[in-house]
Amino acid sequence: MIRYIPLILKSSLRNRRRSVLTILSIGVSLCLLGVLMAVYYAFYFSSPTPDQALRVVIRNKVSLTSPLPLFYANQIKQIPGVVYLVGNNWYGGTYKDSRDPKNFFARFATEPEQLLKVRPEMVLTEDEKKAFVRERTACIIGKPLAESLGLKLGDRLPLQGDIYPGNIELTVRGIFDAPTNNEVLYFNREYVWEGLPEARKGMVGQFTILADNAESVPKIVRAVDDMFVNSTVQTKSETEQAFQLAFTSSLGNVKMFLIAICAAVTFTILLVSGNTMAMSVRERVKEVGILKTLGFSREAILGMLLGEAVMIAIIGGLIGVFLATLICLGAKHGPPMMGVVKTMAMTPPVVASTMTAAILIGLVSALSPAFNASGTSIIDALRSTD
Image: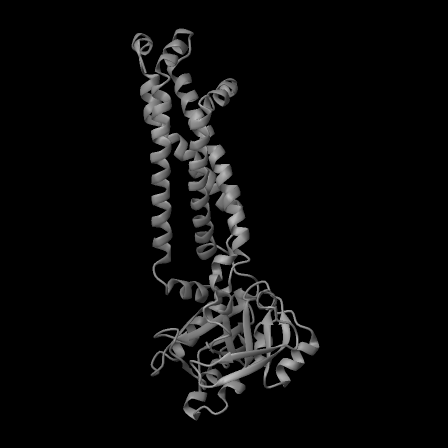
């Protein structure tokens, strides 16, 4: 079959308009398929960073919005393997105009000194760390988020309260960089708790633990949940990566949603390419008869027809991968609310899956018409008027 490759290349573009339109339709469809695969891979197959692998998030078993008692922290710290622990509260609130998507970002009231220990990957100068710990109204903000909002050191950052009453005015004392979770705002929890009832001061949204090593993480997860299994407020502990995935899954069955769309896209491509190949083969029945007269075997003709379909699908697949790569790169500069989606990329496994899908689509769409055409007798093929 290798010697027939030049003939396959020439025949695949014999009807240039139809071939180009088919390639573009396959390319756009495989672009969507590639992006969906990249999202799926980012959600379910991406590996945690070394720091993420050491962290455990503890939340209320009922829901993410239900708090935990603050005194749980003293008991959790006694579990073997726990090095540091920090309690975080989702502040919510409104920054400037809530209708602008870029003004929606994660805002946590936390314990500054403990946060810096639990998240050592956050890059800050010593002066920034000291100011964050010392000043009641100080806050630190991720570098990408600061650039998006146009904030710099010393700027004021006002927030209008909703979950917590009253408004607060923060001062940017640090701009950190980190491999993950770098589009978030942290500030002192004591500043938020001023004026709140004592009962509400004793509740936190979640605890984050830094373990001594990755092998201790599963043991800590079991130990924490077993510790409070008979308590009024039960806990659900999981790795930081699993927690982020669970937060995404709260929007619905994301996995089934992605699989369903991928299946629909693949089926649509099959219909388009199958119809195109059927038209192309039908027009070439007489040519098949001539090839057989010249001594070409049925297997050789079948291989050439399938090769043409696969060639068109591969070209469309390469275009689709290129477009999907551009979309993934663009997503990295999207708003903070995109979360895990911003980490998607056309990794080698995703590219390989997309191109494999392209080849299979080419083969499946052309198999039936090519098989029937290659089996046509010389007399019937030469009599064809199509």
